[in-house]
Image (cartoon, rainbow, N blue to C red; front, top):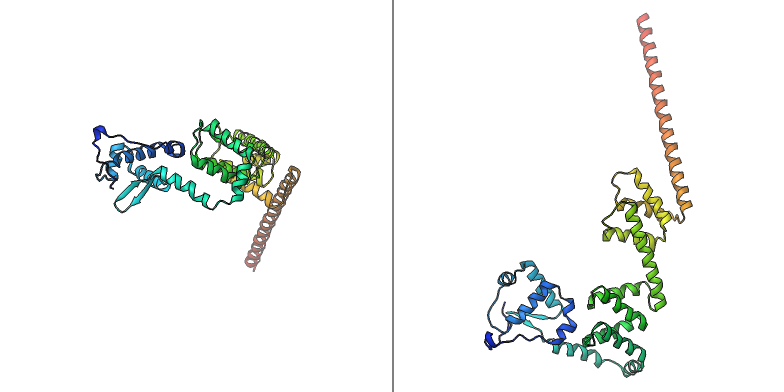
Amino acid sequence: MKLEQNEKPLLFSETTIPDIFFSEHLSELPGDYLKIYMYMIFLSKYGKDIKLNDLSKKLNIPLKIINDGIKFLETNNLITKKTTGYIIVDLQEATLHNLYTPNLTMSKEKVAQTAKNQSRSKAIEHINNMYFQGIMGPSWYNDIDIWFRKYEFDEQVMITLFDYCFKRSALHRNYVQTVAEAWYSNKVKTWSDLDKYYEKQESLNKFKKSIAKKLGKHNGLTQYEEAYIENWVLNFGYNMDIIEIALKRTTFKQNPTFEYINNIITDWHDRNLKTPSEINAFIEQRKKQAKNTKDLKTQVSKANYEQRNYDNLDFLYANNEIKED
């Protein structure tokens, strides 16, 4: 792998990183990938070949992470692959290009509408000052504008979106958009919608904690187990009264799994059972059917046993008649 060269001697050389990197990309780079990127910038000034194995040893990072890191940097347009190696992307030029290109197709109507939207401008400026210390990267402005149009959030919801991500130390583009997608899929557009969504999530979290406690899962639930519960509550519309009936059924089984509980609850849903009384009636009906089946089997077994005894007696009588002759 060969990187570009700068002829300035090492003793007097400086490694320059544009400010746009800190405002646009730093938060999205995992620690090891950041080390790889910084070292590649440093090496780009010297025209020597460097192998990935050597890079792994120099940075004390496993080779797999080196490969994954380079793919990540390439995917996020921080480096570009060439036939002889890689070139460090000029972030200032790339950002300018990304900002300029969409504006070419921006209609005069949209520009006028954006200019007139003082409330939205104030919201964006608040986000800049509150969560970016007044130095928000240029592409964030473009992203926020796109999210306003795509998700139809009002200004208060957009500010809350950034506040939510900021408090979780996850103020990077992918995470912000993931949260925005989740809110949008739950029909959140206004502050009132978001308040209802929070209430639903809080109720759901109580469900999860209660179920984990009842099942003795003191270390918490896995992501897949939580997905089961979300399906029961959000899609099936079942409350804790119904779910608890299913949990009690696990006492009849050793080491019950979440899949076992899910099969029970899914069966109830498929049978269109919606209330605890309907479910309890169904369970009693199944118990009665099972008892009737068991009694029928007992009667059949008894009849077969008596028939066998009768056949044996006939055989004895037949033997006695033969002896008398």
